[in-house]
Amino acid sequence: MNPTGYPQGHALLIGVANYQKISRLPTAILNDVNDVAATLSSPNYCAYAPTNVVTLLDENATRAAILKGLDELATRAGPEDTACVFFSGHGGVVGSPGNEDSVLATVDSDLADIENTSISSDVLAAALSQIKAKRLLVFIDACHAGGAAISKSLSDGKGHELKSGYSPNTFAKLAVGSGRALMASCRADEVSAVFDGARNSVFTTALLAGLRGAADKSASGFIRVFDLFNYVSEEVPKLIPDNQHPIFKADNLEGNFAVALSQGGKKSLLSLGTTVMAQEEDSWSVLEKLLVELYPFGPRDQEVWSRAGGDLSRLQFHSTGLATWHGALRTLKQGGGGKGINFGSLLRIAKEDFPNHPQLVAVQEP
Image (cartoon, rainbow, N blue to C red; front, side, top):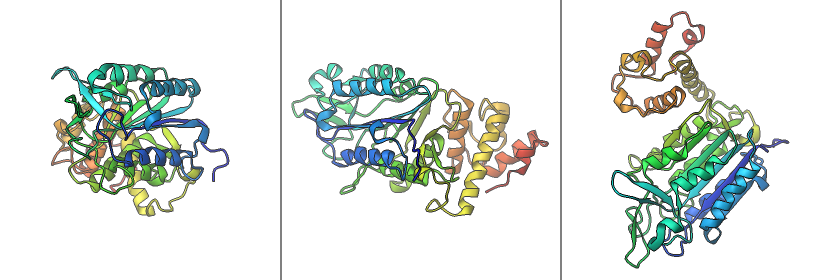
């Protein structure tokens, strides 16, 4: 147990399953919030102060209560703190094709007046912008599959329907700002799975394992943002192959910031894998740091990705080289990024470009 914990961690966790006027969701959604809250506040895991972890469930997750909770989070989280916002529930798409936006459906949302009874992406983005913490991570677990036609549309049984999900523009909007990042449970054209009888959704199952230490493969004693997404994005497709792929959005991240303590701050490889696995992970981490340093504009810089046999059209580009490199290497680890590229070919090209760089020369293939 860490005697000091992680007092700089603050969280607002929201879950809605039993909507008043919209189709309901599985009980797993409420379990997700309770289990994430317990993990964050556990001295054996993330070690947040319990008073810094606020949950809003079902009848307590009204539009007014959620906005008040965000306002209170902005008040208590200072510039040097880390803030997390987690939402599990319905999301809806509004607007015309080509100009779509999204809303967060609160427990009291009414499809007959959705714009005034939900939280629009603009309102949510404005609330997030008031949070002064230099490190803010937003989790969105929506587009849930389960129940009648939930994956396609939201219904109130009175003839009103709303397309379920979130638009890609919304995700980007919510990640705007220095030190801001967003992790969503699935792509816009996918659904977030909840298996029958499962305690948690597929996304939150992986997230919980990551927060409980599995994402800290280098045994640093911290759960870091890129490492957490790396873990979740690799584990979810294992649980539901080819059907769900978490996405990550970041506008301006300057580093792989800590989200929480790992296993109470213990620097141990117990239950995190063998030493060999940690060394392999380190090879990828070291290469990523060096590529960010040597090719700061990302995989397009000096055409390094293409020269290594990669296909740039297979990559997702972000506003910073750091975030783009992180996503590119994650794709590469999963066998993507182009048929002709792999760890070895990328390393070889970098060594050809910088033959006298001592750290690069020392990197070995995992």
